[in-house]
Length: 575
Image (cartoon, rainbow, N blue to C red; front, side, top):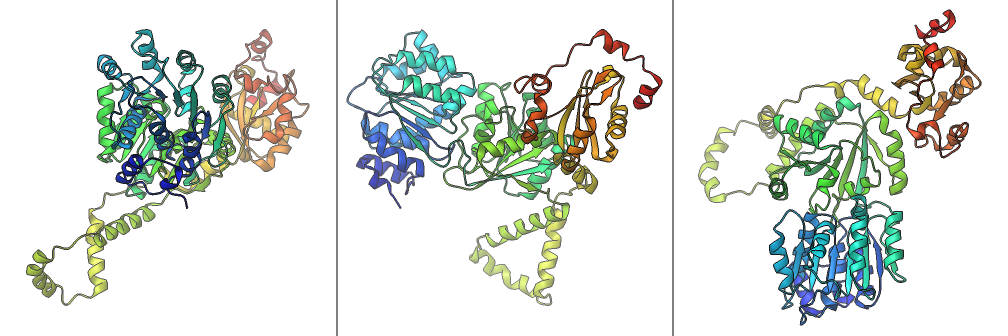
């Protein structure tokens, strides 16, 4: 097994990282550091968040720069204020025994004048966010003509956050003759474009499979109905007594609502989102880092750049709209070689997303069952027992009072004593009330919906149909039992239905060539739910322009309004 001594680092750096407790390099550090120390090379490093990338580029930078000069020689760009501060702090710790190192952190939400002064003092290394760096360039307060090394950290996240034009502007200000080191968790097309446009024959270093997930993360999904997600979140928090988690929501409003409900119900929680001021965000993060908050409820944007090694769980209250972001979310746990759990609370609409994420990660999700009240209570009592085992004994104080206590308990056997102690502690635990997730029907129904295939059908309200009418039409036309069909949504000119996998062929064959009134019926299958049936989507518009993928309702025609005047035969279906 390699050590930092074998990588070619200088003695001051080895001494500093020894003080920080680093003993063995991570895989990305072992692969990248020797290549960068050779100098005069561009590198693309693909590795998951939390695998030690800051040291992978920071230690070589501190070995290659000339600290006798006060010129700015290295520029590190990263997506968020939090990550910017973290990188600058790490570089200062790495350079503890190297004199004259000056690192300037340049980010929004802080006094720009103080940051200008830091650069003017002679910062050899500038760590900045794209937005604030653009501001510095426009004010002509930073000289990038002397830059020898550019590091793009979390390049995929910067592009996801809309910094493409900013990155192009900043990179165009740097010298053509420089080395560019790009670090990313995934390799989407835009990251590949940067490597082609701004790098010269880069060495590519991949830790794990390209675009794959961290092997130390266990991925679990719970099939729950959308209105049961909050109850499921509470049950997870009750079961994992030492949970230290980030809970991801889709919107700022939902983030605050979930955090408020958790706090009201007695959980240690707080919210992090874009509507908070920078001072409020800093306060929330300080409380979370100090573990005064167990569950941080956050949006994707607000949580980017959070670098905390001890996060045990990531909970996806909603799966992200951009599914590649799941990789970044889950990467907030299992950092620095530790293990973690990423949980998805998956509603019936999420089955396609789960399958797509599995393809992105090249990992399968475990299908979990939410803990029962009995299982939670057992876990809580075992947690108490573990705490008892870890209590240190004050022998001096106990020596004075223990004889009297033993005398009081001398007629009580070991099993009785333990039972009484557990009963006493059990009575102090919060009462967990049964809720909808404890109803076996609800749980099995949610799981049943997850197993169904979702289809588009070109019938809706303009055809005089409600959910019951559409269900009767499909059942009568195909011969499939109504219990095997779910009408999930009915729109003006189309609807979404779900059927069991084994009934799929019967439904599609039963609908083939059928009409409702004078209109031919068309059924199409969602791409992410059943890609093997994608040929069905190509009938009318071709593979790139199916009605479903366009996501638009057709405009009502005069014939649509005429369809409200149903014949007696058509009315029987609508009833």
